[in-house]
Image (cartoon, helix red, strand yellow):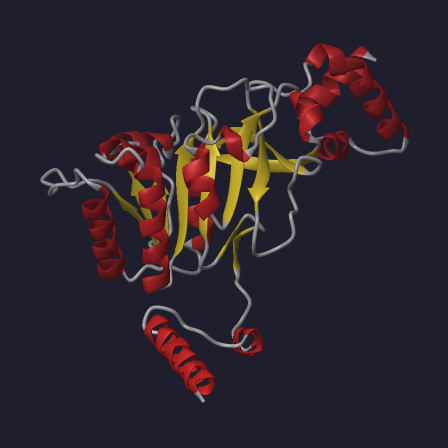
Amino acid sequence: MNEMNDANNEDNMTGAKIAKLSRAFDIRPAKQWMAEAANRPNPKSLWLSLWYENEVACLFADTNMGKSIYAVQIAEHVSQEQKVLYFDFEMTDKQFQLRYTDAETGDMHDFNDNLLRVELSPVYVDLSNIHSIISHISDAVDISGARVIIIDNITWICNRAESGDAAGELMQMLIDLKRRKGLSILVLAHTPKRNTASKLTQNSLAGSKRIANFMDSMFAIGATQTDRPAGRYIKQIKVRSSEMEYGEDHVITAWLVKEGDYVSLMHIGYGRECDLLAPVDSNEANLKERVSALSEEGLSVRKIAEQLGVSKSLVFKVMKAG
């Protein structure tokens, strides 16, 4: 009898514990989660397979790789359909204006009205800690009605924080903000000093251990050795909402170009990271062989450049030298 009472008490205690936990956690059978999630639409891509709705994503690169340029490019794309808040802690309004002005004609790029650039007010309130910064970001979201935000960059925020683990604390607060308001968030970050000829990994990100684990997706920009100085490549580092599409064997190749009033990373094709990082001299014989073979197949210079992930000028140079 006592054993039965003990068992009943144990069951009651277990039930009490679950009831207590349920105030903080939503506890349901796995198949119920699956059924309810299946009734909601799949996440929509915001930029290729690199960033999806309701994700906290990270774009990182070394200095002068064009990450802010690429972020504005992404923001403008998304702004064709919805509002985007671009928190710019890097550039002044004059620097931004000059970047997107045609130096010859003086024409300025006509951004969509849905792209809202944000910078610090000249009379801003205290932003000495992360809680205050996130609170003001939350207020800006409410005022604008935007559900897509880009923060350029988290290094600025972390450097203003007093906590030694500022990056981890910041990410936790951004994830909480995302869940409460249904946001899609892209944060920009720096890489520490690194060998630019080495492959990009999550370890290339400054404070990677504190940041990478919290991210839904991550992608990075690197410089190519085969197409300097404008050559770039974009590599997918982490993905949750789709298959890995732009890993080291299929990175996006690009040129950093300014055409009139617009500067961008113009996608030109795909390539293997190891080939793009190979020194030009050691890669020259292989490149000549590949260009020659594709030329004999009747491919145009543009098609050869796209397939090999190099510039058209480099293909011309190799063909002329051959």
